[in-house]
Image 1 (cartoon, rainbow over the protein chains, first blue to last red):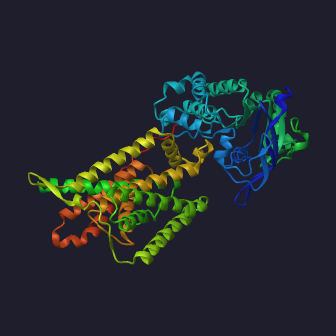
Image 2 (tube, one colour):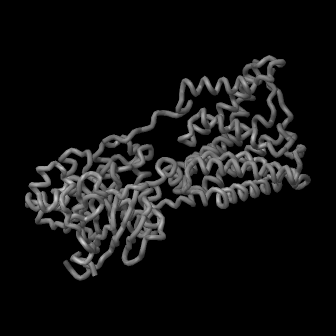
Image 3 (cartoon, rainbow over the protein chains, first blue to last red):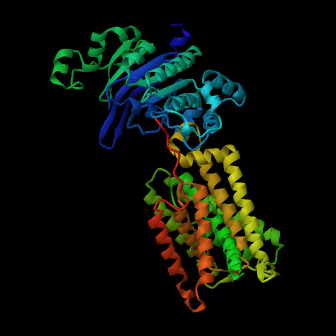
Length: 270
Length: 293
């Protein structure tokens, strides 16, 4: 990784989020370097979506901080976070079904920081997602699931964000469509954009990402690198805790001894 | 022929209520609250017309427009924006409180006794086509109503702010996560609501020339019922609901025997209940396009 690539662009620092009295994320810290692809995996209810929602300021923090390029997002609203260069592709696409594909893309442009280059950004999106151009004037709700996912990603990248957050982009899609989505993500990575990817399909996400955080019960349980994707034992240990067989045998996959990561051993942290 | 006459009168009144209902519907769309103080915008404009009596008509209308928009913006900034994160019930009670406050201020300043607005009274004159007697006001209501509804539709369809308002009405959280500024769309909705309320006021003034503290409340309650009947989720269905309630009001008034017109409101609300029983989500609410997996 080059010196440029190790510059931390997104820092989550001891972040806690509660839903009422229920803690969803507990003192979680992770760092993403510019140009890096970081995956967050973990079982249902681990807090993955909450982390992304917290970064976007769509849920309130109970403690901690998130910094974009060194600047705290504590006092920022959701729209300000978007206009500072973070874009979210939300879980379940969340495209505006009643609006046309083109209108969805126009909404994506609201967060653009530069007044120039909008037409070029749109052309680049059309090139990357030809289906979006084909159905430009169609109500977005009439697109298939895979097409809607492509639209959701296209809507996020026309803003030309520094950091792209993706929440379960493969959810509910057929395997071939998932290939298309990951091919698109690979192209976005090539363009140098920083990506944070939340996925249930852990193996695929781990293989795709430079680094992966495994979350459980709102804390970082383990860290993985792309090479770990093919190491079944390593994945089991990361998911179920160190004492894999005992935990798996007891039928309590989230009840193992988690290896909680600390900011100090983060390879990209200053 | 008398039924054609009824129909024309009903279309005119429907157009006026459509204007008020669209204002209520737009604000509901972007804030998810029913602004119970919407009627007081008309009242504020009404007293402005009273105070400016003697000025050139165009200047009076423009002054009323400025006052109504100013009251709408103050309402949003001082009463509703601080409660943006509060529950809808809290905000609803706040709009109720604002409505009371403004009516109380009006009562203290101008008393409960009606004041004459004295605007465009010539529009009450009529011309005849065969047996039809058509007021100039009727033509004005239909034309102004049609033009303004068309203009707002174009605004929502063609402009960036209009698109952002539609997106916010559809899913506020996602719209904001895309960079849409909540304050911009809410202010936009209140300004448009103010313009529409002023237009409705100017067209109501010749036929209901006396403004009282309750002047706007009576109009807004009926328009609100129209919004509920039409369907609250979309500006278009709210507008059609407003049109429906004005249309039905006028039609029932014409059709009820003269001695029975005291039952007009009962008949109207009876009709509303029947409509809501048959179409609980709204008369003009079409099935929305649902997202597919």
